Each structure stands twice: as C-alpha cells, then as structure tokens.
Image (tube, rainbow, N blue to C red; front, side, top):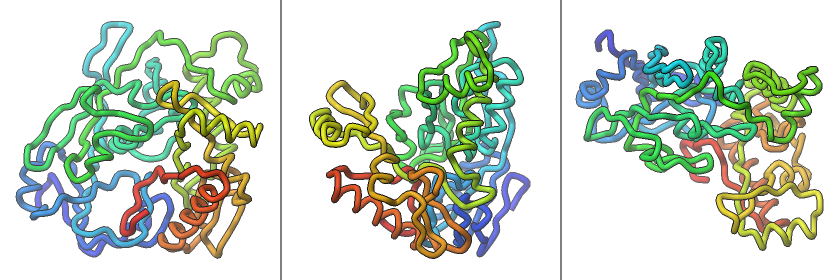
Amino acid sequence: MSAAYRVLRDASLRTRNTFGVDARAARLIEIADANALPDIAAAEFGDGAPMVLGGGSNLLFAGDPAGTVIALTARQVIVVSDDGDNVVIRADAGVEWHALVMSTLKQGYRGLENLALIPGTVGAAPIQNIGAYGVEVCDRIHAVEAFEHGVGLSRLDREDCRFAYRDSLFKREPDRYVVTAVEFSLSRNAAPHVEYAGVRDELAAMGVDGVPDAAQVAEAVIRLRRRKLPDPAVIGNAGSFFKNPIVPRAQAETLQAEHAALPMFRGDSDATRKLSAAWLIDACGWKGHRDGDAGISDKHALVLVNHGNASGMQLLDLAQRVAESVQKRFGVALEPEPRVVGAKW
C-alpha cells in the first residue's frame, strides 16, 4: 500500500456501473499514479491480468468479476502542443468524458462536440471507439498511452490502435493493455460536422442560422441525447446496448425491398451496409418491454434498462431474447456494445 494506490477487499461495484446491478470485486485496486503500474503489477496482480473499471458505462455485470479489478483515478488534463490553430491535449484515463468535452469547448478547441454527454471516462473512450452523430473518437485521437502486461508503459500512435466500428486493439485484447491516458488532436478552426440525421434539425429548432459554432453543435447533441436516451442517474442503463449490424450490401437491399422504412447507411466498404438496430428491435415489438425490473427503454429501442433491482443475468437474458427475435425475423445477428462480465454472450 502506498500513496500511488490503495486496495479494497470485497468491494461493492453497484455504484461503479451505470446499470446499477449488484456485483462485488474480491479485490479492487484504486490507482492514483499510472506511472507506478509496473511496480503495482509486480506486487499486486499475481499471474492474471486485472479487469479495468472506468466509469462502468460500457459493461454489464452478469456475475462477479474474476480476479483483481483496478480503477485509475488520476484526472489531469494538459496541453501537449499548440501551434495557434491545432492543439494536442493529454487527458488521464480517470477524467470524466463529458467534462473533458465541455472543458475543451470552453477553451475554444473544436473536435469533440459531437461526442458530448456520452457517459464514462477518457480511458474507456478508445477501447470502445465511442461515436455519435457522425463522429468517432478515433477521428480525434493522436495517441494512446497504455500499460502493457509483461512489457511496461508504452505510447501507441493512432494507427497502431487498430480502430474499427466500436472496436479497437484494446477491446480485442483486454488482458494485454491498461489505457492510462489519451492524447487528442483538436483545432480552433475545424469545420463542424452536422450532416448526421437530426443535428441540423435541432440546430434549426435552436434558431441557429448559417454555420454553427462548436458549442452550438454540442448543445444540439446534448438536447438530442437527453430527449432520446434515458439518464443513467435516473434509471440504470449503459446507453445503446446493441451495435448497428453491418451486413453484405445484397442482403441489406433485399431487406429494404421488403421493409421500405428500414434505415440503411454505407458500411465499412461499398460492399456492405449498416442497418439500424433500433429499427429492427422496434419492429419486433420490444420497445418499452419489461420483465420485472429488466426492460427495454420506451424512449429508445436500443437501450436496455434496469428499473431498480434487475440482476445482470436477467438483463443479459432479455438482451439475448431480443437478439434471437431479430435473427429469426430478419436474419440479422445483433452484437452487444458493452462488455459482458461473468457470462458469455
């Protein structure tokens, strides 16, 4: 035990996950100084890699985590470089994501405004490659600092992070890396991204004419998210539970011919198309569904909710039944966005 970290035993995780489900960690280590990770790993981790817990907004505890859980608590944000137009900032993994977005806007930096109000921490952002309203965080990442088990502290350039849709090297190899800080490339003069459905309409409703500034885009996004998505502080949820499925173009066009209202977007290439998981789920009648305290939001069909005391397994069971119904009706497989802990998807 030192000033760099502290060890908690039989620690409740209920307030450390936005679903608010009951889970316990046999051993939780809170780490205040990421530079001490090599020494902490040697002294505390044993043979197995620990589970990293950020804001708990992108996971579902279907059971208690096995082994050690660690939480990085450092929250420093600094400017790495600034040429008058472009700026690189570095934020510790423990920084709350929305607070970082609003802080950068206050300082006149553009680039993160479309990602406003996403719950979680900076450390979780590159793992999931969070995205919203036409922007993915990988578009703004300059580098990721991480602790690699068996190697030590390292710095990975954006290209080395192998980002993909809601995916990254860190998500594919969760037992290999602990993200400790993220560097972001931002600009004082970047053009706003307002092409995504709903953003322009919201700006118009706000009375914004012409080209909006970054703060106005952020406000539009915040209004949209608050209207469409339930607040985790009010009802337990992890935001969108399912990824929008990417399917072969021919399959997507066949489905759209049968269901003209099905939203479709270009996928990861011209040969694929991204479908709206929310539309597919809603079409199967799940929006607003409730089994005890496990349910689907009546605001948005993509959002799994805990009405109070649902267990992680109850929520997982409901999510699996939703996916099975979409597969049966449309022949499309749904995958969860959050990490499922303690059970298999």
